[in-house]
Length: 496
View 1 (cartoon, rainbow, N blue to C red):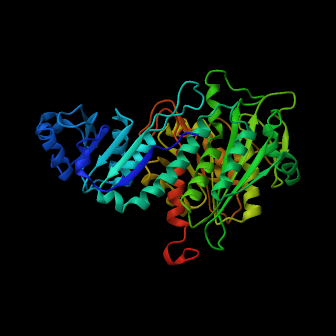
View 2 (cartoon, rainbow, N blue to C red):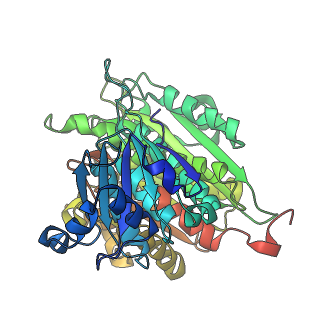
View 3 (cartoon, rainbow, N blue to C red):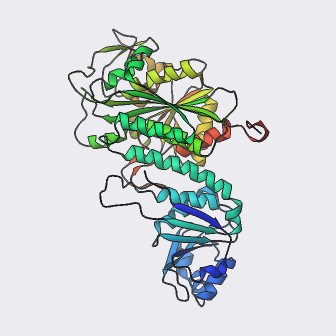
C-alpha cells in the first residue's frame, strides 16, 4: 500500500538550517515581510532573499504559490523555496499552498521552518494529498521518499491536530489504492481480505459469504455477481468508539469490475471500470480513518463486493428478482447493477443495526457526470439536515458536492408491467431515477443520503489535491461529518 509521507515536528533551531542539505521551505508574508527564519536565511545568503522579495518576480507571484532558489550561496541546502502566504490565511489557502510546496519539491528531504503560522496542519494536509503516487503495479518503481520536518513553536502546538489529520489522510491513501487497483488484483476475495486486515486497528470486521447472503434473501445483490467466477460478498465493519447510541451507517457499492453484464458496455473506456468499487473504497477509507484517530463515535460500514460479468449464468434483461425487502425488480438493463447491490445492503443495514442515519456511496450513473462534471458529487437525500450537514462538511474539506432533487413525480418512470419496479427509467433524469430507486429501500423514518460519486471518484487529469486517477473523494468530508455531528465531545465522551 502507498505510504504517507513522513512528517516530524521539532523545535525551531535556526543554527541547524545553515548546514541542512535538503530543501528549506520558508513561509513569506504577501507583503514580503520576513519572520525570524527568513531574516536568518537572508543573512546567510548575503541578502539574496531580500533582493528577491523586493523584485517584480515576487510581486507577480500569486498568493499561495512557490518560488524556488536552487543551490543558494551561503547554505548547504539543495534549494530554498519561498511560499507566499499570510499567517492569517484561510484553511483552504493553507491546504492549497501545501499542494504547491509538494509540487515544487526538488529533494526527498524537506524542512519547513516558521515562527508564526497557525495553519501548519492544513499545510501538511495539502502536501500529503498531492504527494500520492500509485506504484503497486510497476515492477521497477518504489515510492519516492518524502521526509518532511516542520520546525517551529506553532507546529509543536498543533502536533495532536497534525496526527489526527495524518490518520485521516492514511484513510484517503487506502481508498485511492483500492480504487486504483486493477480488477485482476482487487478481486472480491482480495478486497475482503484487505478489509479483514483492518481488524488490527480495532475494527470488528465480518465477511458474509454467498451461502449466508442466500439465507438473508439478498437476491438483487447476488444476481449481479452470478455471471462471475468471483464470489459475491458483503463485508461489515464496526467501530464502537461511542457510548450506547445507535451507530451512524455508511454503505458502499463495491463492483470490482463492471462489464455491464449482458447489457455489455462499449469497449472504449471499459478499462476504467476498475473504479466501480469506489463507493466501497470510500467507506473502507473512512472506517480506517476513524479507527486510527480513535473516534468517539459508533459507525458501521457495510459494503457489497461483486463482479458484473456476462456468462451463461449471468442475470438477463427481463429477469425479475426479489429483493431482501420483498419487493420484486424487473431488470431492464444489467448495466444498472449498482442500485441492485445497494438495495439489499441498505435494507440489511437498517434491519440489523437500526442506525441513527445512513449515507450510501456509489459510482452509480454516467448521468451525474453529464450534470455535474468532475467537480461535484451528486447528493440525494430525504433529510434536509443530513444533506446540509454533509455538504457543509464537504465544502470545508474542499470536496465538491451539490444537492440534487428527489420527487414522487419521477417514480412513474420506474413502473414495471410485470414487477413492483424496473431497475432503470428512460435516459431522462437518469441519476434522479437511480436515487428514487434506492429510496424505495430506505425506511420512512430513516435520515438518508445517497452520494453519486461517478464523476469524482477517479479522474482523467490531476485535481487540486490529487494526481490523475483515484482521488479518495469523500473520506475527509465524511470523517468531518462524523466528527462534527456524531461524535461525543468533552465531558460526553465515553470514559471521560
